[in-house]
Length: 613
Image 1 (cartoon, rainbow, N blue to C red):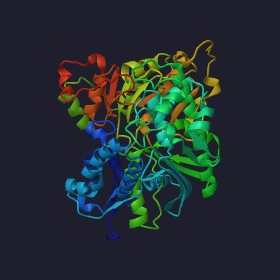
Image 2 (tube, rainbow, N blue to C red):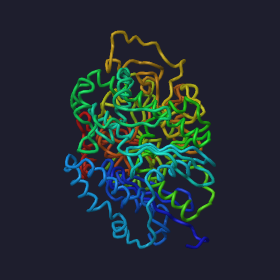
Image 3 (cartoon, rainbow, N blue to C red):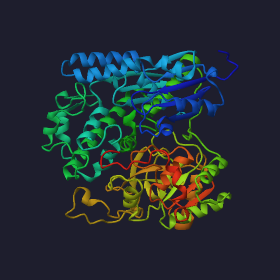
Image 4 (cartoon, rainbow, N blue to C red):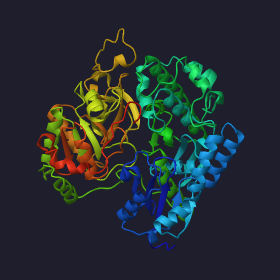
């Protein structure tokens, strides 16, 4: 490898959930995307061939220009863990063992040959341990010279929780908690018990928690989880079945609360909100203790945090409020998708360019596909979608802001797509947060999801403190903070419990104010997302409010839209009032649905039943 030419490293995650690819050139991130965005299969676990094609095309290179292809975990070590675990619990684990062996022996163990065959690649290949991939994904883009490292997820090879430090361009993990003791799996068990789907319903459990009281917290800590002062923990495996069977919870878990596991289609009894509140309280406490230990071990006042558990923005907010750290950087794609990025970065800085100074912070996470105005126009014309072309930027912002001020729901498709699970103003559905009915309408008529789920506010970073008690930046929607006291309203909840508390206007911006007065805030910067910042600014000028509802441009059961065609299909399948796609405005009232019908030639969006999203 010549030091005079650019060095390209391709990172890959695959075969569990949320497969992805990421491409790094000389330590800088060029492109990163999840496979689900192309396949339209939510949490697609297949080998990310389409994502790799995109990354190479975005960089303008071919397979022969790659210096390495790197996988996000050590497959041999993970296979060893699976064999050892299921052997230990045999014959009870016989069924799941047979299924796991079929998957591993047909595909997972042979990722290298699969990549070589699909890509026509014969160059260097490597694996990076799962938690090192997560750690690298958080540290190298953070811009920090040194930092404490915290990684928490379900499980990698053996580790489920890791603590370490990073400095001088090197990442090391020195302390870990091993499978089967896992905070991620613990939270997933409660997700399943409350009637939601594991690996997608954890957000719902987090959203449900404020409707209940943590009445089971002490019992969980006394009987189910042994928690130490330093944040280390052990699960009482008598309550679980993930290590022996095809489900996460065991019979003893179901008896623990005196009620059966909630069926996905069942009504939400208030006790399930109490259960959600209880595990969230336990979860918060464990994360804060782990973060404190990371601070003590590393000696650093900066924290880099990743792993699927890092997407729990409630716990992240508790860590921030504890003020242990001067700065906290959470990887926006903290789940397995982010492992692809971390694997590429780790290999570059530790194997190919050891001692190299990390590139400056990755301020923008718009790393997916973008489309030209001409490409958008061709899609609209091909499907006879009536639209108005508004090439003047100020006029486009004014028209969109006025529609929002009229309480219209707007699909917003601009620039390159976000990397990770959050919509950050490139593939978003927007609404007026001042409307008392907006949360209900967007949940039930636009997103087709549970009415209790909260929406996030987007606000210009310089206006954040006017509406939220947040003294730290939150550009990736990964921290929960309180709505400012001056914006809150007195609410009479006497005699109400559980979801009966839903729908009360608790602040001047009720559509983004959760039942406990909190909000999952996105701070928007002019430097990294100028068009979205301009829209927020214009909405503020028109209404006196600088905040917008920002939720992902998709419906339940579908990935976030990627292409203009995806956006048009999603728009037509919902009750959105308008679509602003590049410089074009599509008004629902002006669309001939019959003429546009061929946009549904692909499988239609599926509206799932309760709990299936």
